[in-house]
Length: 110
Image (cartoon, rainbow, N blue to C red; front, side, top):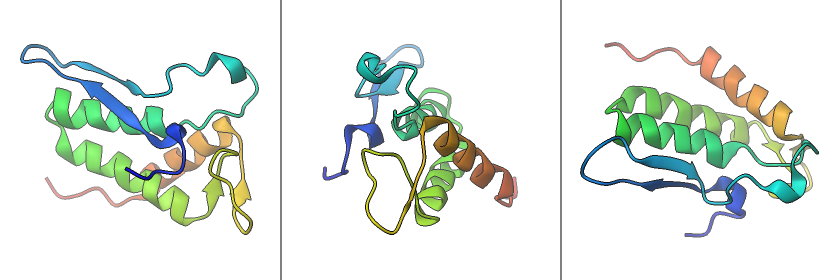
């Protein structure tokens, strides 16, 4: 998979019993802890995987995945995926922008 950064890759370890373990492939990124540099999207997408594969909540997972795509489509980028013409933000701002995208989505009919 070509993703641009490990900050974009969620992962799951799923067995036959239980919900599994869902986490970003990069772990906790201790080398940049507390610097507001980390890309939170892999963590957010790991939560979407938990909802989809661990808890059977596909609609909630789709809402989170769509919010991540919407945030990226609006041009927000952390340093690991930044390119000219986009808006460079830190970990906190990226998370806030994804949340804003979640909140502005029209919920799917049940």
